[in-house]
Amino acid sequence: MRYFGIDLGTSNTLIYEKGRGIVLREPSVVAREARSGKVVAVGGEARLMLGKTPGSITAFKPLRDGVIAEFDVTAKMLHRFFRKVAGNSFFSRPKVIVCIPYGVTEVEKRAVEDATLEAGAQSVALIEEPIASAIGAGLNIASARGNMIVDIGGGTTEVAVISLGGIVLSNSLRTAGDKLDEAITGYVKRKYNVVIGDTSAENLKKTIGSVFPGIKPGTMDVRGRNLLTGLPATVTIASEELMEAMDEDITHVVECICSSLENTPPELAADIYDNGIMLAGGGALLAGLPNLVYKVTGVRTHVAKMPLDCVALGIGKVIESPDNTLGDSVSYRTR
Ligand code: ADP
Ligand code: MG
Image (tube, rainbow, N blue to C red; front, side):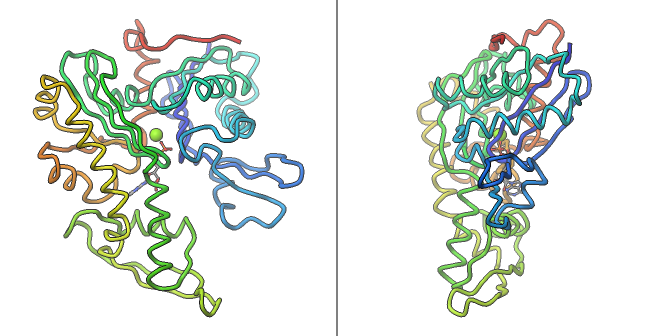
C-alpha cells in the first residue's frame, strides 16, 4: 500500500511518499481554458502562465487565502499531482494524509477530504498545519513544555502554541507572503507610477527584501509599465524601500505573535522564553524577520532548517513512525 502526505499550501503543494521522502514540489497554480473550464496545466508549468495568459486561458491560485475557493479545480490539481508521482498505478489507491491550515471551517475541511478522495485516494486523514510544521521543524511536540511555531506561507500566517502534542492556542492571519508582494506592487506604483507584476514583486522580496535595518541591503532593477506613458520602464528599488513597503503587513504579523504570547498561560510562556520562537514556511526566509521578532518580543527567534519543506517533512515523520505514535491526532475517512 502506498502512503502519501500532502502539504496543500496556498503557494506550494508538496507530496511526501513513505519510504521515498519528498517526491513533488510544485506551485499551487492551475491554468485552464476560459471557455470550457478544461485544465490545461498545473504547477510550475501553469505558474509560468500567471499574468501572461492569452485571453483564452486563465492561470490562478485555487487556494489563494488558505481556503479552497475553487473546489473542482483544487481536486483536478491534486489529481494531476498524484498522477505525476504515482503514475497510472492508481488501482492501488493510496492512503493519504493532508495538511490544512488550522483556521479552516468544517465545510472547508470536508472539501479538502473530498478533493483528495476524488483525486484517487483510498482513505484520507487531515493533520493540522501547526502540528505538522512543528514536527518538521524538529520541535519535540510531545513534551510537556510549551513551544511556539509561526508558519508564514503565501496566504496565511499561523501562530500556535503547542504542548503535549496538542494545540493550546492558535491565531491565524490572512496576511502572509502574497500580501507582502501586493504591498510592494502598490508601493512601486505610488512612488514611481510604474506597474509591476506579482512575480516581479515576489522576486524583489526574495532577492533584496529585508524587514530589519542593515540586514541584506542592496538594490535591484525591476521592469514594469509606466502608467503615464504606457511604455515599458525600469526602476531601481532599494532594500530600504521594500522595508517601508512591507512595514504595515509585517507589523500585523509581529503583533499577532505578541498577542499570542500575551494570551499564553504563564507556565507555557516561560517555556517559550526558554526555548525560543520557531519560524517556518517560506515567509521565514524573509531577511531580518527573526531579528525583528526578537527585538519586539525579547524572545530568541529561530528559523527552521528547511522552512519551505517543514510541513511535508513533519507529515513524513508521522507516516514513517512505525507505531504511528505521532499519528494520534489523525483519523482516516474512507471512500
Ligand atoms: P504555503 O504553505 O502557503 O504554500 P510556503 O510556505 O510555500 O507557502 O511559502 C510561500 C511564500 O514564501 C511565498 O509568499 C513566497 O514569496 C515566500 N518566500 C519564499 N522564499 C522566500 C524568501 N527567500 N524570502 C521571502 N519570502 C519568501
Ligand atoms: Mg504552508
